[in-house]
Amino acid sequence: MSTSAECTGPTVAWAAARRKEFCEAVAAFNSTKPVLILSHHDADGLSSAAILSRALERSGRQTKVRLLGRGENVWSAEMASELRAQDIGGLIVADLGTRAEPPLPGMPTVLLDHHVPSGMPHAALLISGHGLHPTPTTSLLAWWCAGAIAEVDDLLWLAALGIIGDMEEASGFPEMATARGRWGITALRKAVSLLNAPRRASAGDAGPALALLLKADGPKAVLSGEYPETALLQAAKAEVQEALAEGRRAAPHIRGEVALISLHSACQIHPLIAQQWKARLKDKVVIAANTGYRPGWVHFAARSGSGTDLIDFLRHHRPQGADSVNYGNGHAQASGGALQPEAWNCFVAELGFGADMQVPA
Image: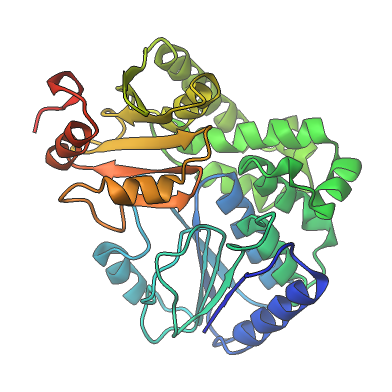
């Protein structure tokens, strides 16, 4: 069963219908076993997981949270094996994309997402923000749905973190205005910057960020240092800032409509570098490629300031060896992927770049 948005604006009636569907789906979970929440490790995914976990536990359910990090995908064979070993009563997948097949066949499943779907599931409930204008982040979808099973007014700040983290702060959501007035926009923005740091650092471990969100009562508690995880996040942020300063020295190579920036860093700086150059090269598709992020792969982030649909662009330039799991997902204006060297070399050659932009096979 899928429920995606095909209207303009998240109406009260639409949100109420999604809450009802979510409540019914959770009620069908086995209540004697924990609910497993799978989520992305960025600010939106972390906030979604924290909202869902805290709301479910307030409703009397046990939960476990599994963050997916560097090189992991919920639809991979490795993840399927891991899930089969879990003794759980239900599965919630948040901010990890959408496929037609369920991650764990036979397990009651809810998917919350706002990316361009890569398939519509029939054996799971999909609550998708794709097609709504503005597009609600996964954390905002999670907060709407969580209100059907518990009191979550005090958790609105978590949804605001996801909204800011996915650059939807100016989209006009009334929830954002409420959070701004209640918790302060400066504290919210600083918290997002800190929470995003661990997954971008070389270790790629966002566990401390999640632990912080599962117990803090607001963004000021995230920043205050009263919890030991804050110091870990600050150290990760310092590492990323140093790597980012180095990455900013890389000059773009331009061929036609594409600007390509080569990086080699163990930190996940390629999306930040692509975003930076997008503002300066507004008529180009900016691709920041990182050969140091994960051994044996070239991870890249694509951004566009010209309105180019990047999902369509990457589909048109898909090289042999690219797969739907690691390539060309996300948003129309923020996409990317990961390619092994041979596929990457074909990709950049097809875009018009020479051997200097290729990597050793």
